[in-house]
Length: 253
Figure 1 (cartoon, rainbow, N blue to C red):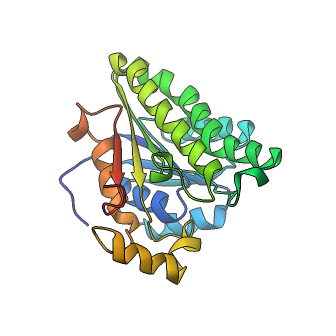
Figure 2: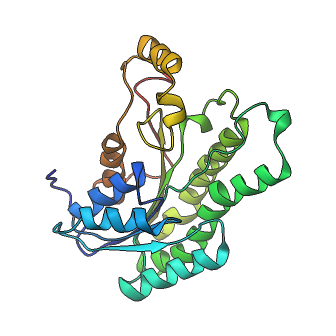
């Protein structure tokens, strides 16, 4: 895929970058010339993705990292800076959707785990990367959330709670960091065909209902999210901050 948007000279960090939406975003950035660090727990997925990106204009570096562990997050940023330099573009994409079911069945263990990964990880990465963005007077934070953060997800209130929380952080960060040249936006996808969401799109009843009721009657693809991420990462969106980009085929229309 060719694009007129260039990220040459930029360093991007994409969590959950080994597959699905994160992998698609990373590929788009590498195609645009950025040096991209992809991170997730499973190194083999990252290495496979990096091999696919060989020959593209930008460089890619896979780093195994459990974003729910502060020591590993700190090492991730340290390694990124040592290999490529300070982060210009931060994509908080890692997530878990544990706790599906009635809200009264949510345990403290579920709560702690989902908050660690879906909220704390993003806050920690912002804390570790944004000071240097502020020093340079530019930067872009892109939080990949979900329409579940806009409308409660049936049998998934814990997931919805964490997604809604980071949408609010997006707006707050936009106001706090904007005067220093750092932008922050959220992309809220609907149902996208990835391993992460296969519980839904492999459910024939759910899929049939979606195709009958959604204005664009199909499931979305990861590249339809990564197009938006490339725009938000680039100077093309220099006047855009604090926004939630809903990409859901009209599901929430």
